[in-house]
Image (cartoon, rainbow, N blue to C red):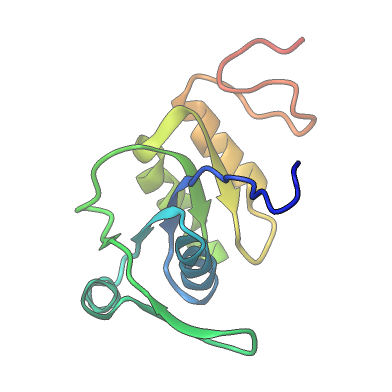
Length: 146
């Protein structure tokens, strides 16, 4: 790369499911970096606050407010290639059932949760596409292992 040249980065599109401490922080930083971020949360008042004021981040690294669209699950329309799941562990099954219709066939769910929820996520998402999850990763989205 020539001196002084910059590397162009393509903006990615993210759906952040759970706009609390973890999802809100990760999504706000992604949006601040220029990515297209949409938030989903089940608490109506929280969604309305994000719509009205943006997401407010206060921490040891930075303090800022980031505007971004926010929806409740029942309001959400569209599909995403990347969905970041940031709910509490005991909400995993309900959240994955609700987010699955918004995941593209070649998309992925990134777990940003506290706990080991990946097998439950994989089982519910893969079942939607006709596949069976396997821990070794040899079977995906209904494609035969091999």
